[in-house]
Length: 333
Image (cartoon, rainbow, N blue to C red; front, top):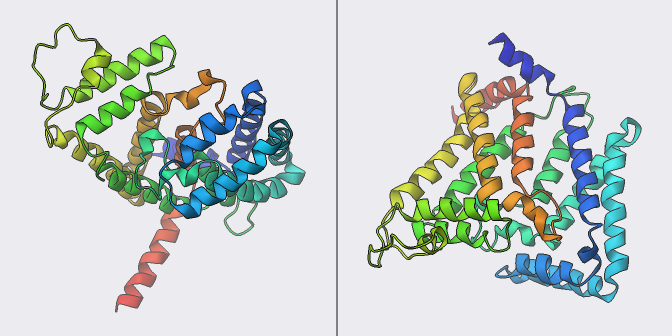
């Protein structure tokens, strides 16, 4: 137990800040890819993210698109400068607070205007595919590791509530129509194989084929000669294999709820969340699409991992939860 507590004590705000700074440098570097200086950045990255979004999101994004397309090279250069600048400011101790505060505003702007608010307002998104959007988690983490004399050197305790909300929300979204069937899930994963490197496309197709096989096919079972990609896209009988969707939703909800249970249960929940994030990073988020020449960030899975690590380092979480429980009891009585 002492070793586990030692690990938690070693996770400081400064270490999370450094990782955030490096991630912003990575994002700024990715923005230097030559396609980013053209309309391809809009047509292949931003526009797809806005599809199906409510007018409040789409309207703002379309305005940003029109502005960007007036001078793509100029505005992309500004994005590069901003993101590299944020990375440098956060990595330097003298300017870390300024860098973190600016990254909150920039992260929310990118999340709302560039990521389509992660698709959460359309109700057609999954943690598997990168919900709620990497930029939002950048902003949340920045707030949680601002220099703070009250909570000291460790990440803010309220990150546990963020972790719980994301995973419980992910479970709810997993059970919504349009993504709550074996065919929906396998089709989504198989769709990622298009344009992916051979090894990643093979992984996507085989995982999608396996998931689809958990349902009852509506086609003839003479599928011995089908490829993995063909089997992955087969339609299954409505409702068949729903048990797998329920288990997937239950696992995500459990990861969120168990973070409030002290000791090894919390560590297990965070560990399982990190493991599932790694799986999702490969089969749902295609490693951020690094091979496309249009990747803007590594996607949300690495941010989920960093969030889990930060929660693990929130050494005042148990005391804060005890105080909140006591207040709730007083109010109830």
